[in-house]
Length: 388
Ligand SMILES: [Fe+2]
Image (cartoon, rainbow, N blue to C red; front, side, top):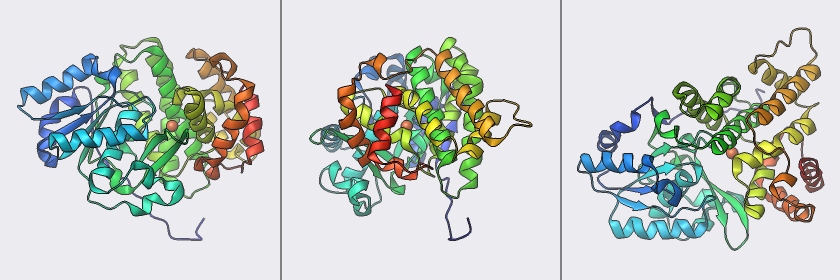
């Protein structure tokens, strides 16, 4: 615990509350962006949320560019195309508007706007993060889902088209200059995406709470995030217009991403491979893999999981850590059922024949390296089989 000196940072400025996006034009001025490029996806461009942001910019007389072709799991080639638009439009800053994909893409465009080459050159797994130099263009992140928390994170998760795998580009310089958390922007999110992204937030909190890194501040934030998901996810799924539930889920999402500065675990390695190989929505992939991984970690993580039980409001008085951990696993499994998303890989057409390739890719993903219980490729394969 006290074996080495550690550094704690929580640097992102957050503008939070219903209507916060209405201050976007002022935010751009404060930050010194004259012409932002809005990075978003084709689905969001058709929504009222995009029109609202456009109206705010138009009414303020602000010039802006738009790149609206980000794929659901952003592709490396998306980043190159977005950079071309950024340069052609003469933009000097970025707005990432949407879910994790849009915000991650915006961050990666910022990296390429200053550093040369392709986004693949900055893959953390090959030390690419050490090549990133700044200053990067300023970025305002505006989430429209509550799960990824990318608005307060320093990473982009990108899919390599050639290699068919996800990789991460991470650097403290990639932190957005400002995160605008406006829960009104999440009111139109369909029930399935509310549920799946909410499970992403919960997985961030649980995996970071158990990651073997000394960071008591992140632990406290993760615990609060779990409590908020336990209290508000079901409400947000069942009553989409429940602004209070939406507002707290947005906080839970942001807190999950702040806490996973500590790192994540095996669930995310399994989920990253599922998205890359079988195109499974990230939050859903986490939700399906979370219970098998919690059971796998059960004994070694019992103490942390007993805290998870407490966060879910379970009275753990008189229970051993293991008994309380089992209650936590039960509570998470119950929540997944209540919010009505698939609970097995078979239900979403992942076949046994996919599992070896998935396990290989999951093992290459770095997240499992900070899983409290170490994982071999064979262990990951077993976890997929349990999730099937
Ligand atoms: Fe995630």
